[in-house]
Length: 422
Image (tube, rainbow, N blue to C red; front, side, top):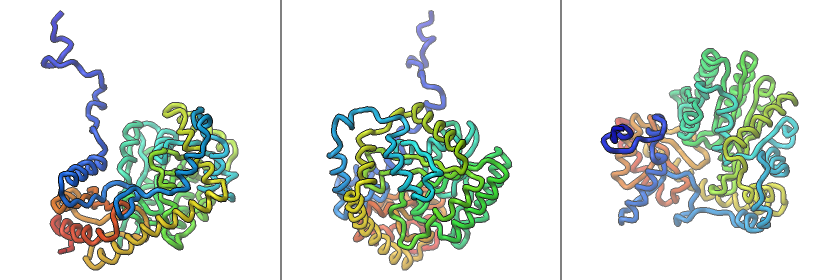
């Protein structure tokens, strides 16, 4: 036997399938974060606005003491046991009420997931056939596409904003029609309020129009509408109640909610989440619950039982509910202060960006996101590049550092051919 027949240039053959050999070694956002930390540790003055975690002004991770207490108080023998595959019944009931309210709870089923990411995965594999595409706004959280690709699906986008930087309802409606025409169904994935990466929140007029469009599309083809509700607890004051429009969509469509404890309880590492599915027909709800439970068994099997048990207490115990709401109000105030400073500084600098009232991120529009981000890294300021914008994580930026970020943004946009001149 030829000794080189099982090798290439003396190297052992890879057992990976070709597609897996081309995978990137790290998430781009985490890679930028690592570079920023490396430069900071080398002594440079660095502002790192990449990761979506809420930090105190001194750079420490913002935590909620009541949440830490709830985790400590779970009996070890309960935490160590397997969770039911779909999650404990009290957890699911509490999540359903938190996500969609008591008025819609009777139309809902749920299963526990590994954060909202797990909910997005379950939506991809249960409401799209292999080769089909989920419909997303043009500005979206990058891992949606990674999840879709890994599940042998894909994403298609519609123009998110018109020239006035308001939500482009006409583009959304056209995207729905195109999805139905090409694949006989549509699965829509929205992330509101406090959209990642833009910070945008739909107003009541926009929600009403979206609901009408989903209802009309659902009369012609199967429609699943997923709302990634990760940042819901940080919505702006006076935000419209999207739940008011759910009954309109339920006339013909399935409505899904990706719920997570990561942002609501500043508990990113616990990976406690759920997917809530609403439908008007009881038989269909049973099918939904079975399908989603099957996907749990086929992926992570059981979720983090310690997290499920602790979060159940946080959702159901009146004392914990009061304390978490008070602690979250403090964290929201910390973030809102940064939003206010950014809006004042960015408007003065003439930066183009959509309506931003609250949330972890804001996106500044630029002709060349990569070029703008690269120019900003020369300033020691790290943001996340996108095709036509850069995402700024104000959640990780102290208020006193926001003016420096705005100045760097203005120079970076101008260098990329945008309008601000710094």
